[in-house]
Length: 393
Image 1 (cartoon, one colour):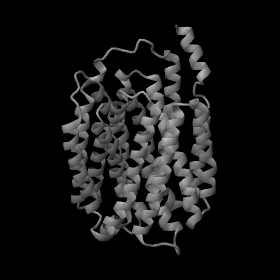
Image 2 (cartoon, rainbow, N blue to C red; image 1 turned 180 degrees about the vertical axis):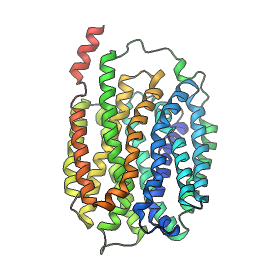
Image 3 (cartoon, rainbow, N blue to C red; image 1 turned 90 degrees about the vertical axis):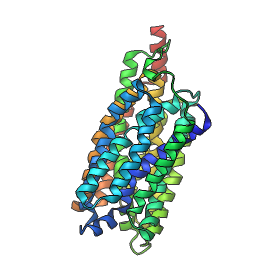
Image 4 (cartoon, one colour; image 1 turned 60 degrees about the vertical axis):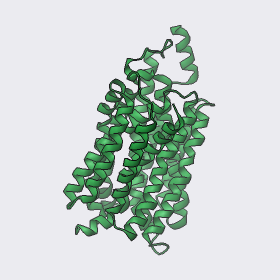
């Protein structure tokens, strides 16, 4: 794969996460324009985007394997551009919800298609995954800071027009540089040394459950952090642009944990590394529950680094246990389950905070992290894998 294509695939990951976070970053301003008193009452309108982000991964992955990943990525860029413009032109919360739901369907293409495309030729999957996930979470940082400035100086609608223009430009470049596929991935020959089926199914079961709980934490935090900072920095900072920069710094710094984890995945056993990161989430959420101001900012660096640091394992498991012919389909099913279920988090975020508090939300997330830790403990160990491979041979 040529370098321009690799760079564009990483940039597309940033765009994918950016467009899904713009609404949450501007929700207070949007609510005021439409006469909605509390931002919490508007958050359920974005749930469709995250549900479709999950459910749409199944057909996206299937088409990626059987029709072609390059073609699907071109559909991704076009769809993101069109739906961002649709949100910017919306005249009611219902119209916003419809446009966001359609956006989620197009955004669902990237993870089961773009990531397997990027990993199809690499010899160091951990490092490749780490840098790709760094790019994706830099999209969160860009969304937080750019949306804050766009809302302040140009209005929330301009915050959706900008990524639409980026999608158009990136789509043209991708069409220019991405090589044509001779055959769809699903038509290639299988690996001569496949992983034992029972090991594969066990690993994928663990990863699906863990990715579901991880996606819940991801959606609760990334969609709630803007309002969390607004509430916990009262009396310290109130300017939305400044708060956006603070939140962007959290995402930017924490995202580098994925590069570190990616390098470690290629060098050390996966299971204890994954388990250690998940356990750290429990303690960080408990501390953050009662923190405010700059202490909260430090806690946010920690829990976002732990959430981001767990993400590379999900793609690494698919690379290690699944042949490239089926990776898009397997990834699509995993993502559909995890993000389909976790899309409920976006719907519940506003009502939960409104009825209780962010403190209660953080303790709930600590409990979710506990469930993830118990699940990861069931992941096949390196010794178990070697024994199964030897028995099969």
